[in-house]
Length: 234
Image (tube, rainbow, N blue to C red; front, side, top):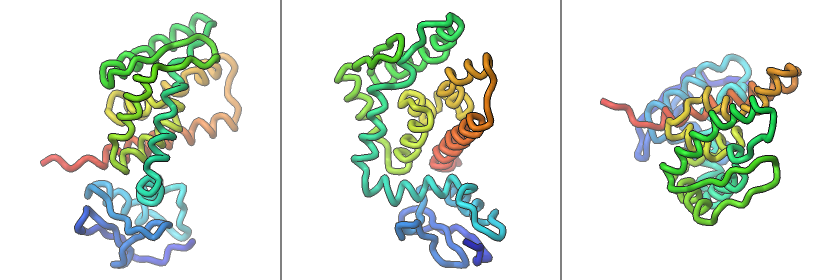
């Protein structure tokens, strides 16, 4: 699709802040008006559209994509998105530890155990840790606590949490990113701990490197989206 608009602006509307292209309200693929809960997020999305030259490249507009997903999918399929996100707690990455080598075992303990301890304090949800890949059932009370934490998010934050959790393979890491316990770089590092360990030993091929870059970009965009949702402090 070619850029045919000249001016991108933001404006206050009844429910938040809208974005216009040549004065016309911007809409999602599902035809919802793109109304954001904060001026900062609206302005950042407008900047993504203003930066387009010639062909419009959706891949360069992650904030727009997250916002449209919140309106077109999360808002209309909220229970499904909550369930998909909360289900990660049953097989969370940080609960599955290596049996060897000792260096990897130590690294997992150093990076992942503090996140489990934080989640226990924050959500009163104790996670069982196991060695190897055999599934370890989690206590029903733990799963219920994590499900409640997910369901408490509004549509925009739920979209961000779902995206971060899927990118990280871990609800614990996703929640830690959402709540500022981890920044984007630390969340990526925690989620890619095993892969990074293997790369240090054996190197990395181009396909794996591209996949890791894409995940890092998704996590970074999600962290920025969450930051921009916060109202300006004045």
